[in-house]
Image (cartoon, rainbow, N blue to C red; front, side, top):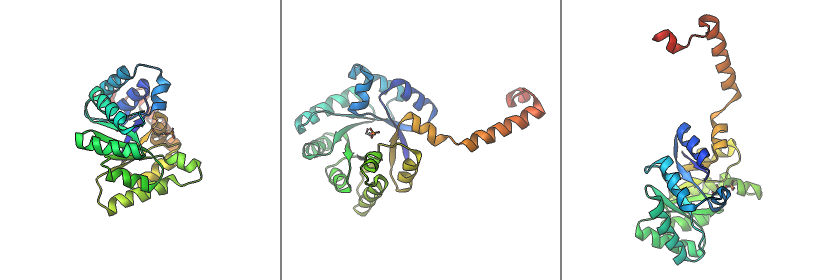
Amino acid sequence: MKYLIDSANLEEIRHGNEFYPIAGVTTNPTLVAKEETDLKALISDLRGIIGGKKMLHVQTTAKKAEGIVREAELLSDTAGGDFYVKIPIGEEGLKAASILKKRGIGVTMTAIFTPQQALLAANAGADFVAPYVNRLDNISANGVQTVEEIVRLFDIYMLECQVLAASFKNVRQLHEVALAGAHCATVSGGLLLSAASHPMTDSAVQGFDRDWAAAYGSRSVADLLK
Ligand code: G3P
């Protein structure tokens, strides 16, 4: 499973891109609006940080297929590189996805809450579907099971569409979608840190430091080898 950062905050993305093996960045209108900045400059800055080869997913806000297609083309021209336009699932979104597929623009169909929405999106030519795991859990549904069923459907029908699981609040959800076969998961910088951390890791490193200092004082490995 590949990891992406779900953020429009340049500092968070810069940090995530420097320290973690991320495959790209996803944003949504809420995340972009939080930054209160110029959209065009933000997209260029984002692309500048991650480079042209990593995925960048940016969402449209138009409601009609023609408007979505227009926004997708503008976003694609602005973002360049490996770009995917995020479009919320719905009649207009499905129509736009089919048009964009023919025009060679990558599509991520987002705000997916059921396996049937995902299957329709894949049939319309979407490259990715983004099911919202935590938001499903919050309404007493089962986010991980939904991801599992989408993965199974794509396998049964040999669809190339990938599952880009989104909306996470904890590492357990992240781990369970990985086991369910999600191709990608997009998470906050904070959740990446939680996934990379463990108190026993800290305790192990403290033990190594203590034993090392007892033998070599303040000298480092590099000091001893130069
Ligand atoms: O970008 C869509 C998704 O990641 C939203 O997450 O945390 O707002 O449910 P969240």
